Amino acid sequence: MEFFSACWKLNQQGLVSNGPQNESVKYKLPLRPEAPMESEITLLFAGNFNNEKIMTGMDLQFFYTAWSIWNKELQANKLVPVVMDTLKKWYPGNDFIKVPLEKDSTHLLVKVDGNRRIVIRPLDDDRIVKAKIDDLRYVLEETK
Image (cartoon, rainbow, N blue to C red; front, side, top):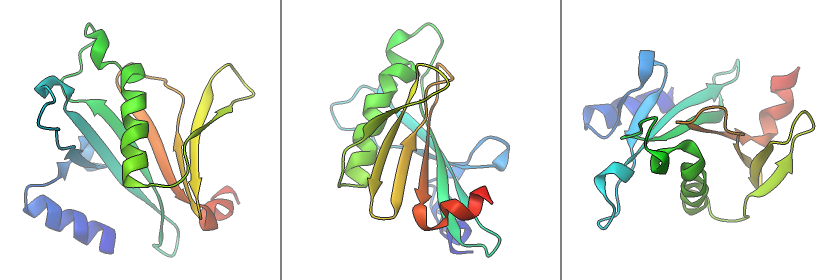
């Protein structure tokens, strides 16, 4: 599949590596020249495929590479705005909107442009910001 071939080529060039348990691809986002090293962000991503091996989405996990439980500046709640900004730069168009969840007081951050939906999930971890990109043309297939 093209996704895996592209990832393998990037791995051979040293641009990406294997994520934990070889279940994702690990990419260190480039730092801005003025940014301190501790603000480096790691992205783990994995493609979602349907039965026809068509890529229908991607799971994303962002975290500060230098994260530690005692460093309050590198917690997931501080990373959410950075992730939103990064995803808006990568995928320009509409802004994220807050969608409150019925079950509790949390909310999703959702951005839709054409058939692409990006969802940043409520935080359930002090370290990781989880997001998902979906091709809306295939979303109903996944719920059947």
